[in-house]
Length: 452
Image (cartoon, rainbow, N blue to C red):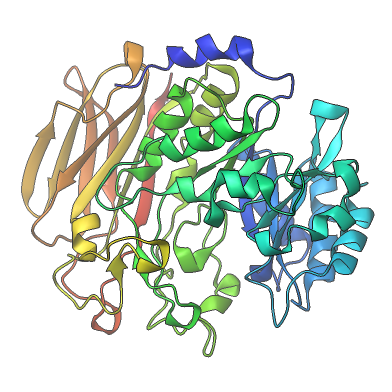
């Protein structure tokens, strides 16, 4: 059980800057977008209480100029915010030179849609994905840190070296701790890495804490063929966020639309699957098609409001379930490992890190039971793995499965009455695309019929 009341205790020592929640958006996936498509994505983010998109921009992508302009047009009209994150390792044929970074910032940081960090009277927020070996460039781009508020993600070198990157007193005015988003091995997610960042940053520099629901990638062309323990991750990471004895100034959800790493919470969109095109990531199949993740947004307004203010309201009870669509041992693993030596981890059997289970998070006003009919068997869950303090909030559990099933059913029952009846349309089979296990998640959700 996580004590949500802890959040109320620490609110008294927060900075003046209001907390904010961002979602990482891969600009390179937006090549076919027009203003209407940008607007549609922005409206979904706003409905989830997300404050801004962190636009990941790869140098050399030919549509950067066009899509950035369209994004700011849509954001300005919607009252939404954007800011730039310059992707150094993901850039095309080269990396970000200062004389290409500065014009973008000079042009767009003045837009009413560009996110401003208010702590020092309002400074445009800027980030990176890695690029610590180019940190000294930011002394040219942002002399004395006086124009932009620079919060890079140099997590591959750790918080201490990240603060020193660029020489002298360093260039970072805050840090993103992307490496903290996923657990190592079979362990559950913790705040250990987050705490190390917060300790190094002290109280005078902000920390952008990452939150992610999943990680699986089978992209040999990008040298990315592993998964991390993700079954309970979405629920557990949010419990870490709202239970911390320190509160990060920012959260970054990873991601809105990074389909290649399977942690997208935005809508499926076949025009954004360029990473699966021939000659790109060399994926053996498209493991995103027909694998929606929209359900992971359903409880975001509750979690985000709780993080920001210490309290949250909701009008309907709801269930979210997620699972893999085939049994892990039914097909070949392909080149997928559990963990990666590239990040100094043991490479385990992926099934050890992602066992065959159905996962459930249910937002309730009070205790209820969960009844599941799967594969011709009935299961009654009365003891949840995690329950909210005070009885109001998200109840979480999972159910081990050993057999296949067609469409199945989950019911939430309180005092003998069914309050949510979810006919889950997706089953679990013993076959896989091209005979290779898809370790991505299928996510579904259902609201109760009665307002609370």
